[in-house]
Image (cartoon, rainbow, N blue to C red; front, top):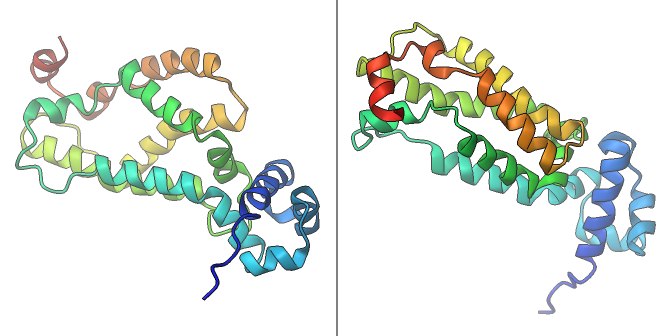
Length: 213
């Protein structure tokens, strides 16, 4: 059986990426994408069922990278997690924040497509959906810290979602507004000063002192 010819895929995906970034999904033109790639519409349809499938293909690597990080950072069994690790998880330091900004900067176009060009696709609510996924993971850390008496604030899962919505907005917005790396580095310092999770969640001074100082 002959293998399908995938040699045109990189050209199609690059042209699609440019068109989606410029026009957004709903206004993007398949004809313009084909013209940019130097292929016929027939050649495109042999590879992708339509504009939605093409958009998904363009952002696939970014989506998979985000999902992989979420899987790696999510913990369901806390039996091997120390008190110190639970406290440290809420330390809003520049190293942690810059890791996220660099990670997303390396996937700049895909992340921007998900943030502001995805209306009309399955990723239309990406910003909300991503925060919801982070909330489910983060809230488990918070509840475990409460169970061990490390923090005392009474915060519902809905309230945690609101807090993380505000937190992730400080990450989304620089990409929506086309920040470059040097701007992200300055912005990172502001975000770290803005969010004091230890105080918000009611961590004891003793618990924080032993881990951070």
